[in-house]
Length: 192
Image (cartoon, rainbow, N blue to C red):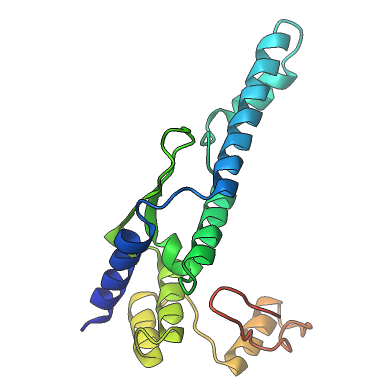
């Protein structure tokens, strides 16, 4: 089976059988409500003080284009909570799925599906390929080959290449980073 099919089948199964329809974790629901409450508070302050000064108006204008209920941190919190519930699902897999959550108290379920456009997200796809290989879903050599062929802009490292890359990215200066051990971690935690 080709790598793209293996990845698609894996992500589709996770989306449909494990995530879609599960209840929004309480901490994610709380996070969405806190964001909405804070944004509403700035709007109230702007309305109450606009006749005197523009301080809150400027803050409100800056927040106007932000999503009301979720931001990148909120999504990471959601992925972490799902990974706690469904042990063994790497965050990279969850980041590749398309989610819909609502702050509406009557809509407590997560909607989730696999979006084939994930193959355009090079950094996350490389993470998916390597995480899947660590889980034994496909061979590491196949993951490396697919990464090199399809995502050449994302560097793959051996330990020696890691050290050389750090030195080159630091303008040729040695730092304490090139001597760091390559992280050896669990499915979702890396300890340096």
